[in-house]
Image (cartoon, rainbow, N blue to C red; front, side, top):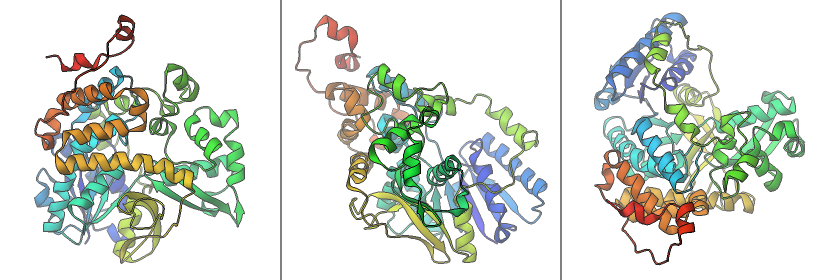
Length: 467
């Protein structure tokens, strides 16, 4: 009887989706699901929803328990799934709105940018504690992390526990492949593709059907106005760099200095008349500002808003079934590079195809990325490295370094502004980043004279230093 622990089970949708997926496999019809959350009210709703899934799906032999103490839940665990949010909506609001004061305009901000860096500071210490607990209590268990910023968190967890059985999971690779197959009018099951890079910035290096290269057709589609509009950043990547990139345009617009330079360029490349995912400012706040969560979870528990019992395209259930039964499958996972992509750093986290069977998850060799794609990844990897080092060393200056090297932030603000912004965000989030023990980047003197015209158009960094 396999035991699956879900940490962060009080999420509005995610834990129920994963539970429903796992139950579709025969090997988990008698599984025990241990739900863990720090919010007892959300946890109670989550357990009710799972009980309802058991009833509606006819899973009479499956069982569930709820825990606010994860140590209790981890005993005898075979699989541990993490999907947590530290600081909630209030923290997200601070990192989006304060950054915008300094001209750093984020859409999602959970992977790179000030939002992603601060999420790392808030979340990595908690996930490192979970990694330590797993190695003490259930060291053979596989940990599947769905929490962002994916690359930073997997990197930092493996720094804390190098022997941890760990993979980071996202749906952008399989989601993007499905989208391109639909645009091409072909059955996804008939397509062979290879995708590689880093999370949210991996590239489809090949896309074939019956030995026929479909990339030329994909490149042509990128210049069709009806496809370009509503997915513009991804189409610009494809138009200029030649390979489709994963993840939405809203995400993609903020990992680089090319699209969010000004209100004018945002209007050109991030038109949100079709979808806020195309780059709407602060769209992540809309995603997390859910004052009606109780009503929504109650509706799921009452089956007024049923959870689909059909298997989704998330990789989590595929992985646990392959490990449990030995039936091999291939997924895309975020793992330590260790030479899998030869022209990216060995210690970074890459998203690559992985074979999964009784032996666990095994990354497959990719070789070299095209050099210009590797260059795009490398810029972002060094920001990830600095953010992880900031947590490891408790060094507030390294938080500033990560912010300064971030492509969007560096394009949008001066070093004086970035330093002031970093101090202000860290002060606003002090209760959620105890790892920094109240430390802030040092104040530095401003060496220029400010004209009245300059002050009217810019945030004065000196203002952030005033009590």
